[in-house]
Amino acid sequence: MDSDRAPAECRPLICLVSDRHRLSPAASTVRQLDDLVGLVAAAAAAGVDIVQVRERDLPGRTLTDLVGRCVHAADGSPTRVVVNDRVDVALAAGAAGVHLREDSVAAGRARALGRRGWLVTRAIHDATEISEQLAGVDLAVFGSVFPTVSKPAGHGVAGLSALGAAAREAAVPVLAIGGVSEERLEAVWRAGAAGVAGIGLFIDAARSGHEWAVGLGRLVDRVRQSFDTLQPLV
Figure 1 (cartoon, helix red, strand yellow):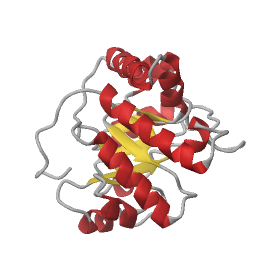
Figure 2 (tube, rainbow, N blue to C red):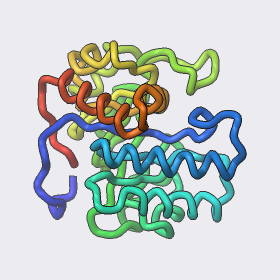
Figure 3 (cartoon, one colour):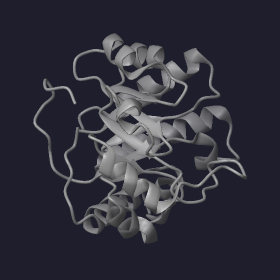
Figure 4 (tube, rainbow, N blue to C red):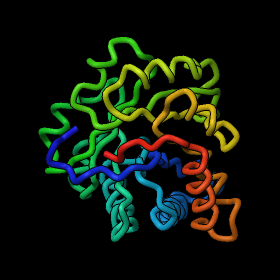
């Protein structure tokens, strides 16, 4: 972790991953994008720590515009907007950082391209050679921990034991992703996760309230109550 960063707050980390198709499946693209920006605003109001914009099918210009709108929607809150894989888009849109996949540019390269305080997160799927996987990374997102509709049939499920192994080996916070529901929060905390990331977890929570921010606020409270151990916010 970069020593130039501000002093850490202590709380479980909460990361919303976007999917406009699941959020508004029957809507036009314009409406989907508008709804997604609204969800980001609600997440920021609810106290979500990180929003990962993961709209990989969008053209570069449209994605850059969307990320810029999401950054604006979170403006004035502690919520940080990062972009899945696209360092160029993150820089152009003023995002707080980038989330790297296994086939993305190396973390050191991504950090060198970014501004001071640039947040670099990475997806990991096992605990093998974890120090190499997470070199130069601030935060790891581990999964899929459970079966999830976000991945195709036959996609591997890592499970809680592998999550625990990754959390023990990693020198950075590890978030659990993939099939994490409110009922499974305590299980991922007991396995050693520093927080949670997800798609459906947040969409379902948003829809549960009379306003999206209300439903998301309840989820944020539930996560913080379920995680009995405090981890540093990078």
